[in-house]
Length: 256
Image 1 (cartoon, rainbow, N blue to C red):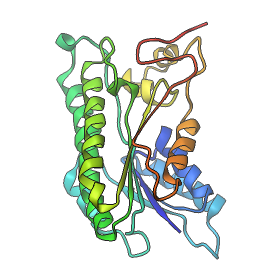
Image 2 (cartoon, rainbow, N blue to C red; image 1 turned 45 degrees about the vertical axis):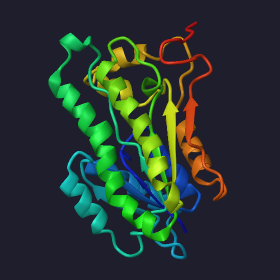
Image 3 (cartoon, one colour; image 1 turned 90 degrees about the vertical axis):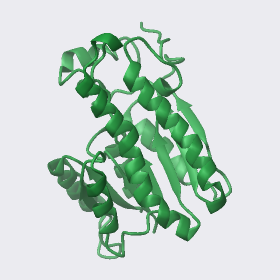
């Protein structure tokens, strides 16, 4: 039985991926900041997939990826049944605000860079040594079309996802000799909590982002993550960009 560690498992792509992998018989380590949501998800997964024969299918780690000490402590403290991480899904990330650079909130900048870039680095640094020791493993980073093309008022969020794009390529090179796969999945417009968070909880404004077309759903990305993670050992998808049919790139969406 393989084990996947998922950051940001309390909503969106991470939550959907936890459900997808648990349904396929994987052990799932779910992480995030919101303990109540983690506990609720664990109860759901155990109720659906935990059996006497298989035992527990999920394990909860509650920490903020921005807190390097907390990350290190959590990963180092995994019990023997859970400490062999076959796949790391670096999913935790967010956008905060939508404004020209000269009007942007420096607090929002810190939150995005510390989560999207440093958080990914913190968790990867804690997990990679075990993969190198075993000469196997797979790191899957959730990027964005915003890491391929900049859009108006996206400045720092786009910069953080451009960093994910670069780090994924660098990890692929650095880990090549150790037999560790590295993949980036870069989604386009997907209707999750993303825009609600970006607009500070304004659900009406968030809904407007997805009006007039059929956006991606969290389950779509979870299916892709599972596909990428279960390919034969000699096959590695390095970079995968996925958008709704109505979207060509960060700036071109057809709305009806």
